[in-house]
Image (cartoon, rainbow, N blue to C red; front, side, top):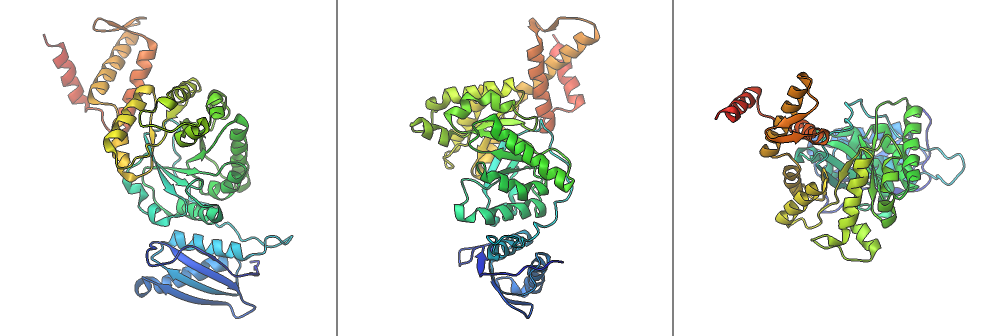
Length: 420
């Protein structure tokens, strides 16, 4: 294995009395003598030796044979330990010198079942990409998607640290049934994010501040290049975030620019700022943009996803906003706090009445098709193809959520409806 020589002292991570589930590490050059590790840990009694072995193991994998290392551990999980140590090593290398060695990015993530294109995306929870304490149990919140954010929630000086933390979180954490999403930075910086996260097979990449089809194609081609280089397969979906008047104006062009795109979403904080107006609870100032995005998404065969509701304490306001969004044609909203997930999931789930209507429409359509009839009727109403398609979409959503009645219950309900 090639060895690397640290040329300066560098640190990564956080420490302090209020820090938890994180680790601070400082590495410094040492001419000889191996690894001199000084470890302080709140859980040293139970995990001190295992932690020591893991730190030395990461240094060895990165090719560091000699270094002085200080560590202050606040109960970090293994994925955080690896990310913080690697970040400190990368910062300690003289990467401005031509030919300077760069440490390996580590092994690729394990193969997982990939996320289907048309899966439910009612709720997606944003998590700061440099805060490990929020990541460990994120899958328990039951959001349809978990977004590990590398953009707005991460300070510029910590982008490199967050990128590695997200990489190791994707490879080392169980997010349960949630779709594993990463919001990269605006291009061109976002391409560097892809270099580290794509090898860990995320399900979906959110592209912020998207204003052109060319930006989507850059991301698409870079994902494909990384996959080919590493011999990876499987789809990595893209969800452009439209956050400017220009982005909204080009919504259909953007949505049609790559087969990787599964949804379009809107970012109303940035959009209203560019309009030069204040974002209001009523949302009159963004009504046209939201409806334009829904129309463009549907025209391109994509899911339209609404923006976040920024007042975490206003549960009723969130419920009204989510129901309104659904009435506009949106299929989901963003979440900035776990408390918002249940409300949003309920708002975008089909009701019992809607499910009953959809089942009757689909049954009537199937009956007419079997009888060779070109006209479908339900009671005194004629049912055309768009109505059938909407009913089928409702049935699929209900099935995915486990909301369909048992066949015996359905038969009993149908018999009851036929009784005089």
